[in-house]
Every structure is written in C-alpha cells, then in structure tokens.
Image 1 (tube, rainbow, N blue to C red):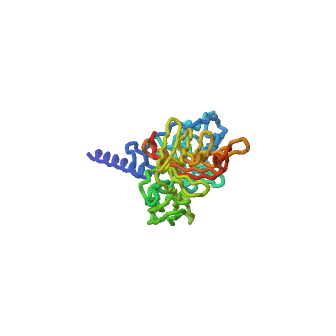
Image 2 (spheres, rainbow, N blue to C red; image 1 turned 60 degrees about the vertical axis):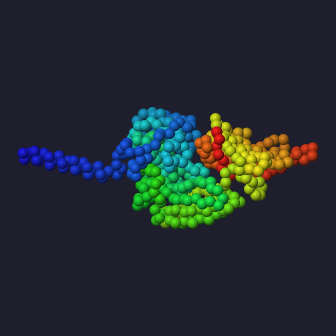
Image 3 (cartoon, rainbow, N blue to C red; image 1 turned 135 degrees about the horizontal axis):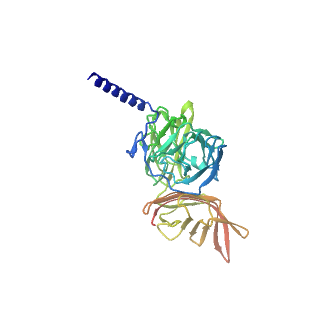
Length: 424
C-alpha cells in the first residue's frame, strides 16, 4: 500500500511539473478549435495565386532572391542549406486583416540551419494612413492564423522593414494601428463616428512590443478594442467640417455643401516609446450619391443620376444631372476594378456640356494626342447594389467646342469624386 501511495505522489508531481513548464512558454501552442479569441488570433483562408512567381536556386554559399520590383527580397546566409535548393516567391492575395498590399508564399517549407532575412520595401502610397514605426511583418501559421514576428528592423532611408526567420510560409507586412473608418463618403450636413484601434491586445504594456521584441510572436486579432488613452496625444482636422474628440473616439460633422477642398483629413498624433510621436489619418469625402466634377477650380457640378458597372474586366461610372440631359460624364477603365492608375487608352474620361462642348482625358501637341497627367483612384467596388467610390484628377484635359467652321481646343484642370450604385 505504501508503495502505491509513493507511486501516485510521484505521478502527480510529474503532472504538476509538466503543467508549470507549459505555462512558462513565451508563446502557447495554438489550438485549431476556436475561429477567433482574444489571445489566439483570427483563423482566415490562405491566399490564392495573384501574380507571376520568381524562382532561384541557392546553395550552401548563400544568396538573395527578390521579386522583379524588389517589393520583397530574401537573403539566404551561407550555411543555411546543405545543398542546392530551389527557392520561390509567389505573390498571393493577402488574407491578413491588417495586411498592406499583396502577401507572398515563400517556399520551400523547410527549416533553415541559419536564419534568413525577409525584407519588405514599402511604397509611399502604402503609408497614406499610417507611419513607418507601426509597420510589422507577419506569417500565416498551420492553423490559418497570422502571427506578427518580433525583432523587426526599420530602415526609413531604404523604406524597408526586415525580420529574421528560419522557416517559410505565407508572409505579408501590415499596419498595427488604424482609424476606422479609414475612408468614408458622407452626405453634406451629416455626421460620422471615428475611433482608433489596434490589431493587438489593448492591454499590452507596450503596444509595439510585438514588433520590436526579438523572439516574440504575437497573433493578429480582430480589432475589437479601442487604443488605450495613454497612446493618444490629440486629434486634428484638416479641411472643411467640424471635429469633436473624446479619447479614442471622435465625431466628424460635414459642411452643408460639397467643400472646395475634398476630402477632409482626420489625423491622430500618437505617443510612442522614448517620447517619439506617430501620425495616422483617415480621409472623409463630403459627397452625396452621384458624380461631382469641378473644372478649372470652379464650382462643383453634381450629376446625381449616376450609376456604375463592373463586369468581365470592364468598369464604368456615368451620370447625368437630375434635372436634364447635360452635363453628362463617364469614366471607363479596363482590368482590375480597384486601385490607382493613370489616364490611357484603357482608362479614359469624357464629359459633354450644353453647346456640344466635350471634355476628354487627353491633350494635344501638334498632331499628337497624349494622355492627361493625373490619376483615377478607385477606392471600392461593392457588390451589385453596393457602391463604387473613387476620386480622379486631370491636369491637362482637353475640351473641343465647335465655333463657326472649326473646332476650338482648350486645356483644363478637372477634379472629381464619385459614389454611385453598382448595377452590374
């Protein structure tokens, strides 16, 4: 009997020691059961192929593989592999809810003997609403959850963020903090609520710790928590309207009419470590449903009877005023529905005013027609019944107007904003 008691005491002690050892782990082993929880991240699908892969064979001497635009590069040190190994970088759709731009599938999925360095180079347009110190790098684990990797190195001169790893999977870089909504289209005279949130647990002692502490991996969660007040310095508004703030929340009140400067910018100054300041911002367009156009800095002309379509790579928004048939305008672009592009034969604008005056997205030099400098930036293309939203500008649009027996050409600056219902 005494031997049996000793046996159970020894067994219980072993169980307790194993339990204590597990609780001391820095990152607990993820469980595949919950789809989402406050500590275990968010389970999402893997991305699908979205571009041309880059492949390179690298041996024991090491080497570098990068995409053609150098958006992502991987430095394999000497001794990381024992024999010639084929490495591939495959662009994929980004399922990281905090992600910026495309994600990348890096293979082979094998452990390296020495850490490789993954470097993402960010573009200015990817920092339209955040700051470099809030950028991180993450990978998707075997349970479909994205993990931020600590030890990120930021190089502002090279516009890059880097991290070391001994394994490959699907990787992306991301923003840790943001304002919601990041972009909004609101009716004149209306109000909209804003708040600032983080993808990490709001109770963390140091918000950016997951990005800066080497060896720590932290799940990216649904941004349900407001950013703690200790990180917020102040809210600011640039543009028309009125902003009132209360800690991590604010309310924007739009002016009664479409303002001359559109959009308004709402920004928050954040207090970071060591007294540094960061800045994030959101854009608010004051715009009723339709297409609003401003020619040569004049008044906004609203075409309220406007609609849009997006089908089989052909996208279009067009509209008329409520009260008549002119002015009439349309914008057509081919290919990817959302994103920024210049004017071309595949992205063009036309507008007709009373008196047969026509505006087009090109200018004339001698006998040659050239695309106008400027851009079309489509922010969203919703489902049928939802909204297509965007903004455009032409710095040298041309107008053609019959005068007597000839056509008179002139150049103009045209600005526009649209928020229209998608029909197809």
